[in-house]
Image (cartoon, rainbow, N blue to C red):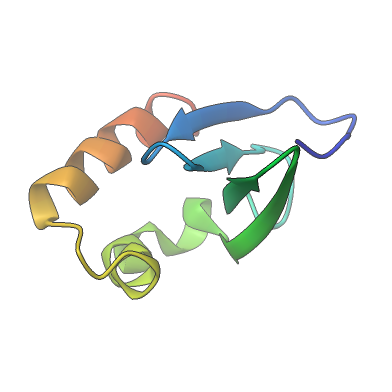
Length: 82
């Protein structure tokens, strides 16, 4: 996980991929993937102002995901971001 002074929250998507939430950052949502002992970013978005495009953003990264799973991710995100 990257080092930063900003408070972060992580939400797992699957076994090797997770969402990182940084409420004060301009890109407050980042999708990261673990590989061996490192992790790397596979997508960033400004969820706070563009949450209506979240489903298409996630679907482009995970084409096998369904709308119920996307809804569950949004419920988990919304409890952390204002």
